[in-house]
Image 1: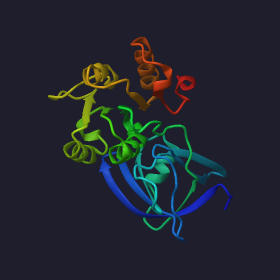
Image 2: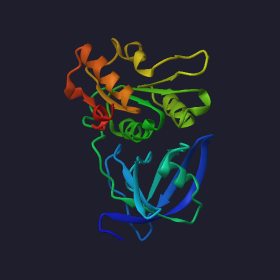
Image 3: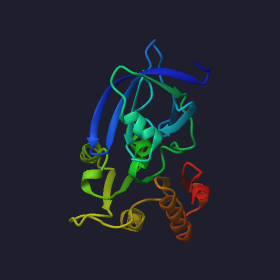
Image 4: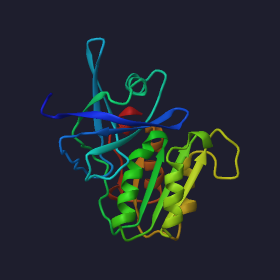
Length: 236
């Protein structure tokens, strides 16, 4: 095993949506994971003689020997397909947690904006903020249909338990009685007048991330209050 990797055991698989499963990886040996919520690990495996690595973000808080990863299966996705074919008891190799996405200021109002599996770092950061933060939080999440919404039960419970949290779901491919269209278009509806110079954390498909950054900049939000993984502009 390389010094920058860790062998874990897959101890639980839970189907969350028709395309998403949550995987629990246990490190064992008394190992405790230490990371900043929002950071990711890279799952590594060999396929056809090549080493494949893909990043996934734990949705649980650090301080235990387990990681909970929500992974959506894509038909042409090498790693997501491989993970969805795993069984409880198998060993999974991961790297140590790292990454640019984590909370910068627990006393500042925050806005979390995500689409698809970009929700996973937001869930971890939201849990930390609700536990340690002192301001207001908005959580905006875009998906195609209600069936595709990840961690809806978690978010609904957190929203019910915390008066300082507002959750908004926006659907792009389903008519319903809630918000529709691109999730970033609803930022003004949630933030205007109720949040004081919030920090914005954005994760999802690169076009959404870049579009959201540009929207916020046009509204006069300083770059120093906008946080992303940092690679999305190059991808677009």
